[in-house]
Image (spheres, rainbow, N blue to C red):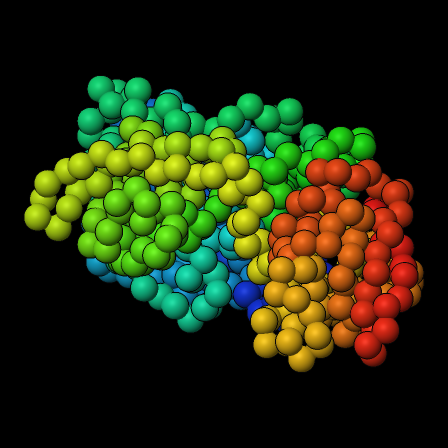
Length: 443
């Protein structure tokens, strides 16, 4: 049998209008059932059965390609369709064991560690469970019609090359493996254990029985916060983009540098446009997601050994240094998982750092805190700030001990690391030119 492990169903449930890339089809139930009808007897794909995929990989000696896909989610529909149908990918896919997974209820969290906020992700495995690499595209996440697959093709080729050299290269893959986790499966995490079982309810409302991948990240964060423990920064700022280090990578190659931000850590390291990043701390890269994984597992501060191949074919080693506090600078504002954190830390406020021009028009300094209330949630935890007296168009100029300029992403991290649910955070806002004192409830 031809096979490929593919796609955990992700679906974001929002109390207010979600970002465009998290929108779902109108008939979510019909979409899931239609996907099952079309795929469960497919000649290439094992449908929704990870263990069968691993068994097949061990038996045949082929690698596993794992695509995790949210069927009802509009995001990434284009690349999902291309992976299923594009003839150019078929010769590569045929070299893998293939499985299409549409829910995260019972995935092994020691193996399936990836960007839970994406609606289309891929993991590449050896049959013994060793991870070869990851694929995940925010470009496709933001544009449902984007069907380009050249970057995906390069990831397939990279995984096959690693498999060909396995197990001689196993030591270089050590950093790609998942870290320790307190829960074996998502349905063992308390907030999910209350509502979900291991299997989908195909006889009832199947969508409502599905653990979507973003829920895994939400549940992990809640498992700390609900106990009164600080939420780990890796969970607040997961899978940082290469831009965090000042690098923009081309979408059509594993890790080719398209541009470098002047004055950034990458520029200081000597990384230049046209370089191909071959490895980070000896981890071979097969995709942009592999770069993000290396950042995800990096310390704070961190110095990473980066090996690049110059356009002339020469290879060179460099040291990429990330200063203390680098992780808190990661922009999480458009992540699905940030909505849950806004409920915990900000009572449902959606905040935006005022531009220098807007600050000048309000008589505010460029170095001070000025977070504009762009929106407010309406219900439950996400309606708490509105209930506490916050209004749209308020500008937060002081919160807790903070008066220095920071982004919403930085503030969320600071609050989730320093405060517990139930605390009331003193806050000052500008409203119609006047200062108003309020308290922001942590939940």
